[in-house]
Length: 264
Length: 351
Image (cartoon, rainbow over the protein chains, first blue to last red):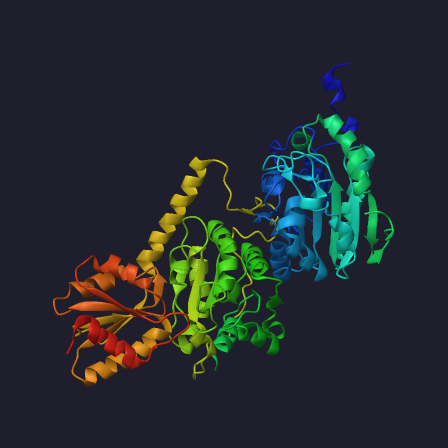
């Protein structure tokens, strides 16, 4: 059997979403970003909402989002994605608006915008990539950097006495009345990618049904920033990141489902 | 009607789609009026109190990216906070209307009128080579009239328009003719990111370029646009300049006061005129230069509510042809017509 015998429509098991541009990702090989970006495209394609969707790509590794999608995207200043999304949504309440933000963007410089957009119950989807580091600028400490974790601005490891504690922000967001859905996922196995896809679908359906803010966190790797191979980075993530940032739903349909007594 | 209320009423009547703001004295009445008169019920426009000026300007950025008529108003410290966002809006070439009901600085300063934000408005404020099309009203009537004009100029050039007012204009009451209600937009520009229409290419709004050779081209395009604005949009008013030997140059509220000064001076037989720039960018360089070229004109004097900012542009216009004097009050203090009159006599030794 030759390759041309295999490449037939009846043998097709997976193809790139038609909403993805013919553009090579500029994410590092092994990084989780690419998987999340294309999973969002798949959900939008499956829901058939690509003519009514506007994505927001703020500063960070997310900044080139507009290069990868075949639907409208607005680039935002660092941390301001939720404000930009609010500005768009308020004049076009029937469009689908989502932000794609890293941990520095959402939980450091943009904390105010994030919390207040959530508190107003802006009818948007927030996709939050938490890899515990500033990837775009070359691996500095993020608000979500784990205790003892080394980055270029905490080369001897994060000392919580002087640098503060890792900020577990999504459980905080879950407690805001405007927020209807908060969930945490990963993309390190196919099973996890499928769970993420389902969560993203729920988030966009919440927006369609005007239920309030949906926050989908993805705990991801940054193998370049962490100085690890992709495989070792994923293993390190499972062993360390998942302890501080356990996967699962925190709020569903406006009801808190997380264990408030669990260590956070 | 109070100046700040006139801003709000004119915004509703201009068919604004959204106002995003944050309270700051002396312009809080703008959003209060929009809420009190239920602008949303009247035209469907969105009115939202943001959690900060930083957030408000980025809401403006978002709304403007969809091709809607979006605006904000603030006062000096708030405009400083917005400056990053204003640079992004200018860089992404989005139309919007910004209003600065300015107050005394630096820092928290005072809540009284000031023109010390002139440099911030026309020389930058935020980072990068950009320009704000700047209108300087000197009456509540102009404040109201410039709202629709400001939106239209912003859309004409895909550029933010700034109305540089001050605490006096915002707070004072005058009788005005309100503009007719015009409809909100129903069609949006091709570039607007409001959902890719079927069969069309997706749009994106950004101010980012990785390659300097590409970003130089963006900057060249911006500069070309600014030259067009300089060619087409210079606005000014000349009062009794035809026979004037000395000309006061003043904008905004202080031009109103200086108008009284020239009346007083003329009653004493002194031929004094008033040149009032209405657009601060583009600045009426050519018109001021032409005035300085007149043989009968012996000198000009910049009168400002600052330590002397617009005077730099007047000197650039005059290029040493005639002496340029200065009189200013600082920190929220406003001079009387007599103070201005006497300052002119003192500087030019007019007896």
